[in-house]
Each structure stands twice: as C-alpha cells, then as structure tokens.
Length: 122
Image (cartoon, rainbow, N blue to C red; front, side, top):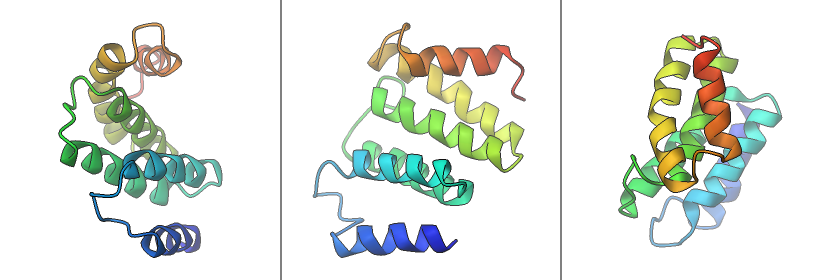
C-alpha cells in the first residue's frame, strides 16, 4: 500500500480528484498501469476504478469509450493478479464493447481482451 499512498499523495498535490482538471482519467490510468507493473495490483484496481469513474463524470458512454475500455482491461488484469478471476472476467466482458467501438477491433487491447476471454478467464 505504500506505492498507492505515494500515487495518491502526488495526485492530491495536483488537485485530484477535482473532475474539472482534464485529463485526469488519463493521468490516473497511467498511474494504475505503473502500479500494476510495480506489483501493486490493489492500487492498480483502485486507480483503474477512479479512471472509469472520471470518464463517466466527463459524460463518456461506457459502451463506446476507448479510454473506459482501456481502464476496464487494466482493472481485469489487476483483479487477475490478486486471484479474483470472477471479477477479472466481469471487467473483461465490460471492456470488449468500448474497445471495439472506441479503438477498433484490431486494437491491441481489443485483441487482448478477446484472447483472455477465449482463454478461459473465469
């Protein structure tokens, strides 16, 4: 949780979670990606959920926003990393439509989400 606190302290110093400071969702997504890469799946989960929430506050449609699709795929990876295969699959199922709509069927993330679903994440 130390890395999570460090992320949150740095973000808070810059005004987070004020939704009127764009593009927070992308900053938070990158922080979540870094958290997962550093082995802090719990922080990645929390930050990915923040990114999804911020996108929603900006009026993005969860079924069409590529940014939401990216955050959902990251949320899936974070949940898989802590052994929550059910939560991971739920996030993957939610990630496919926004990936396809916002980023296209050939996008790396779209292909990864479909591959993970086909591979039996459940």
